[in-house]
Amino acid sequence: MDFSEQLKQKLAEIMKFFRDEISSIRGSRPSPALVEDIQVEYFGQRLPIKQLGSISVIPPREVQVSVWDGSAADAVAKAISDKLNLQAAREGNIIHANLPQLTQERREELLKVIRSKAEEARIKSRTIRDEIKKEIGAKEKSGDMTEDDKFELQETMQKQMEEFNATIDDMLKKKEIEINE
Image (tube, rainbow, N blue to C red):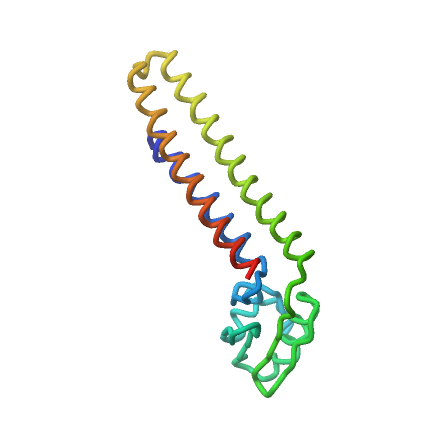
């Protein structure tokens, strides 16, 4: 695998991790990601809610889980209540969780969290880029690569890094808007 592809693959992994991290952070609008991975005790196993029912969002701030097996409804409601620290109401096989309005203080905390996660992603990407640059330098020193090839590769990698950072910034801005709504 060439260095450019190696960097591209690693950046994609970091991007996926970052996307997963910020999608689980609640903004003013609820999303299914808020509850889908909450673990529920079901017949001696721990399963995420997404495997026990369908999740939908009812604007402005309600998450609704429709469980397939009614015997799991109480456990799902309790897990949501415990994890999100709010009251989840059961109505037959349907669990309703109304999310309260965010306070300004809480919004600021969430903004700090997502900004630090974005910075972590940038740091990881720079670390990987630097490791690959060292490998390229070693190849050049050993004579397996010309200086021109080295500079061309480094330019390509720099463009990949700029695209990665721009995508991180876009995702961050969208999440900041969502939190501030």
